[in-house]
Length: 303
Image (cartoon, rainbow, N blue to C red; front, side, top):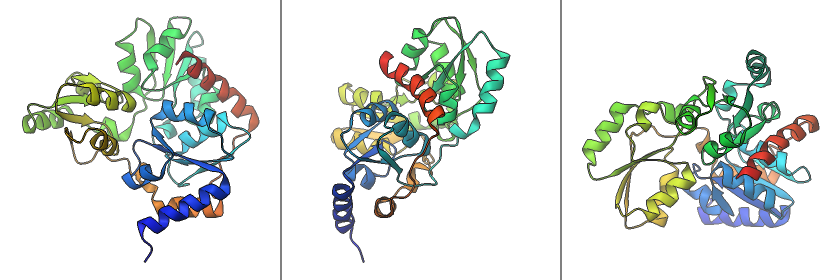
């Protein structure tokens, strides 16, 4: 039976042979985060993918994240660790649907959450993440903005700006299913804990929070906070880093189902297979890549 150590050693061998770097999202399994060269949120990974000195990028996340790396790195091979790891929210809109919305609101600019396909990015004026959404929206000229695809993030941003945000009705399944009654029960169980939630949560959940943060902002918040216990409203993978970086503090989920099944598709065995056979190569038509890159580059310039 192959041990975890043997699998990790094989990944290290393959990485050297491929001249590869491994990037992993904060929501990945703990053992996958451990073998990554860099772990971060969507904005951090977008930045890092544009800076890496490697011939191959192995992306441990979901499809749109690997696409973003491919958009920024046309001369490199980008491998998605698990080919079936999709993002249901990103699949709630495509280029044709966005074009219909642009026709309906011709005066509006399009701000596209980075959790979207390359095709949707190509139809957008600028991308954003949950960490920089307000800053990006404020940077756009004009008052009317179509925000796709996350209605909850878009609504949160609308409370932080005077711009007119036109919301597309998409959502993250994991964050959207967190209910206020679950939050109240968690607070009853942990009355001294601070509630920190992701802006992809419902507005009525955000209203109950002590802090609203992207995943990278959450990591900084809990580290710098004088409080010792926290209820966390995001995918459970983030708690691994929180506990590593703050061994003297306590972290609790709001509910037991804060799990993205697509993120958890990636295992160490999957990473080995993908690297050995160079599977799941991300390819984007050049016309779409160039248009999408404009939207991503504008985001990175604002950030």
